[in-house]
Length: 236
Length: 236
DNA sequence: GTCTATATGTAGATAGAC
DNA sequence: GTCTATCTACATATAGAC
View (cartoon, rainbow over the protein chains, first blue to last red):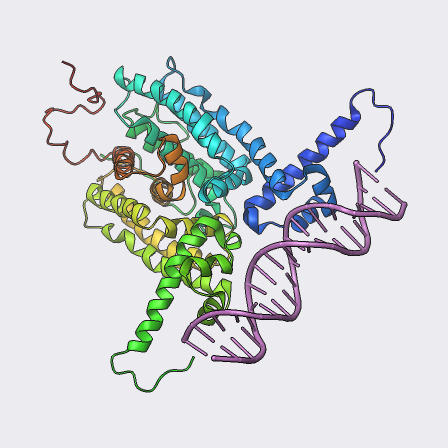
């Protein structure tokens, strides 16, 4: 479609950006489902409704498209730990972090899968990110957690490994959703499955860190996994 | 495949099996690092020191080789939950399960990665396994855990989601070892990293399920308070 | 900017000598 | 059983008309 010549409000740049975003959004899904090698430019073109040549026009190579996609995902990734600050309440901060991560597993499962696939296969395109910004972030947030421990505000635990555990537990609801769905006997995960997962992770992390759940929620019995047997309250 | 007539000690069949195992062992590493699509028959042949044509002679197609590899991994997978039996002590049973899974992440990281890659990309070759034997196993073991909960022997928790959490936390030390290594600033994970991970996971799961760690380390410090921070080293 | 037609490499798979 | 040489298909990437 031909572009107009008058462009008073940045219409052209805007249209270009819109197409780039459209291609990236499509690529996120396709690369998530097939991996980098498994996805072909023909498949990406078909999925985005464009001829192959257009993808090359916009991104040059398949690898450039892929790294552009990774970059757009990383922008999102680093901002999740905002709640973990020295002055925050440990239980509230960890709960907010876990809920944020679980929300992403539900809303951006393809982004999570692309990231997982890249790390799984050696993180060739992510080495500098992992050893740079991510490592720095973990060090910084680990000092915050260690500060809480030293102040007697929570049980001692190895902070970096606590983060590894939280990442693993939350991202598994995106990366391994096929497995979880098969075990729960569902074609795909339901919101209540994510809710049950969130509750489970919160219990493990908060109790595991000596942080009793704030106050048993009045509606805590709602939203359990359908496959799970009914839950009794406490022992005794 | 032509069978020989004279085979007094099974030498030929044994040699054949030995070669198959050699190819599968090599394929486990190559498929783990590159994924199914990313690995080529030429690469597999080079890695196993055989001509390409031999791989085709033994397995027919690349996909047949891959599914044979998956089968050999699944054989291993289902046996880890043996410690979870009704009459067992919940803390000991869960600890044994977690230690077994962590041991596999250390000793068979490639197997874990192949499995992870397959699930990540839709589990095309694993659907019947996930919805069949695995689902059955989880249901069975979930009943055991629910029995412990109903008997007041542990804190209430959603059993299937507890298993998802344990799988995620333990397998991340194989599947995402590159990320963990980068954050910990190591070229590859050390035994002590796995040990620290095991301790962290055990703490989260056992305390999270209301199961105090069995016996505090014999390193004195009499009453290790539940929430107190015993972490600080000797001060002076 | 867009898209058809095509160049060029490499993949999986096999034929056939040994 | 083993391995070299080769076939066919499809991958990425591009040339060049519009």
